[in-house]
Image (cartoon, rainbow over all chains, first blue to last red; front, side, top):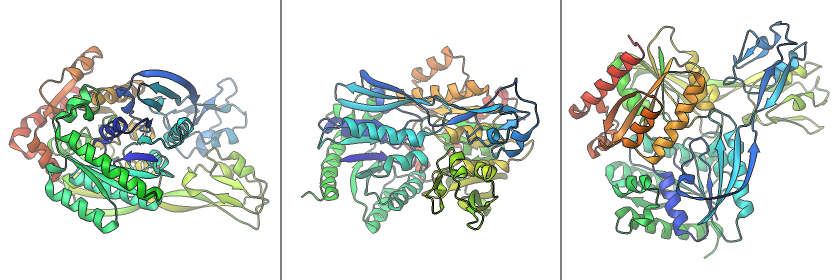
Length: 288
Length: 277
């Protein structure tokens, strides 16, 4: 079972839920697919057993000794990345159009060392993660590789729990396509609702089974109701509802799963969520 | 002056800070978080006009195409494949760079456009506001962000509400930034991701400061990191369940009596730090 956790809106509690589920699931392989702002790995100490450089993008580099400043490169660049034969590394998309037209062959495309792909052996199973250079591109490809790594090290029947990124774009698409089940963690705010609808639509678009967890559901009972109605109309199961609970920020600061706070309301809710998710997982795999 | 609002981590309160400051500073608001734009839920703009955001893609003239495959060879994004019967395009991978056209000897390639999102512009609280909206199912947000920010006024005072993270969606907006504000929260996650955002701004030489949202009054975790790196703290927004509920309904926090002073103080810090007039 490959479970990907996404949210649309950031900060709704993806990582909190991912860590809690990973704690409840025996030998889950974890994948930190929020490569831009990875937080899942902060919970786990372990030993890096594999580390590889990863380059998803290229960048144009001008050899000043060959350049005759003809301006051909600047005239073909669609991204406004060249001014007076100087390349703006943040605007360059590495398409190579400039290199194709340079009469002096002064421009080459260099691989960017965007990230390190890492497999970490933790005390609770493997963690597939990346260390990404800030401002770099290619997070979709990176996410695909992290999921591939997680599948490679998983033993039969083991779950993969992938913590995705906010949004609906490239990295999110890469994290849900082909997943067995997507858990959308949302919150009952107008922003949460709006963004939830967009990711729910995205799951539909890519034909991935979604389930929903409403976090801090008691902050706004009416919007929680709206989310539930929306789900009922579209056949999306609501797998859990977690109340607003002071234990959650505390658990983040102490870097422990919420399941370590046995008397908390959030712990209780996560146990129910896990029970319901197992039922949904069985229907997804056709196992009864 | 264009000030980017970013956070690293999602959900720390970028939009909360951006919309409230837009009102207090009298600044135009641009929602660059085109994957999940939420600022309009709070600003509730009027007279909204919408315009499609499009990207180029190549079209092949079968009469002229020799199926040489030069185009597919030149495409760095693997958006083209030569099947020997035709050239196949994967439109969602195409960046619209026109490299294929440059290498096509028989001149078989022309360009058409497809819509991947929209730009909406309106007015709220006497300021202009605009947002980009990426169509669901599209993977590339950057062209929509570029199109949105192509409409930035010259010599205006603008707040750019950015996407979470530190990758291309954020750098596309930073290209236009004169200064920035990082919104964080006093948690281990907030700190970790704030430092990523700070690193990005430092590499670009953009001056910035930090706002602590959901402050519990004990923000040591953020304060000590800011002190160690000489990052100015522009202010803090206290956490309260009342604020969370007001936010959930799309209300502007600066309109709550308890929240007026903290936002005024942040606005003042920004005016002073960036010589904002």
